[in-house]
Image (tube, rainbow, N blue to C red):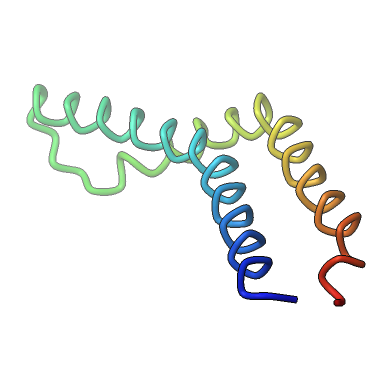
Length: 89
């Protein structure tokens, strides 16, 4: 296994992680921004107010996007295990 193979596997792994995590992080970011704007407008300074909407939004995001995230991870693992004989050289 050469340096190029290791770099390719690491690059693909990092890209897959970013691709799988990005939708849920964006949902969390948008909900947090909306709740922060709401807190600013209404002058509510409760720190725990952001947790419940974020948890619910991420749970809903997992329900809606979980199938795609799991398929992406399975596809990566199948490609990794299919090329396993190449990495043994």
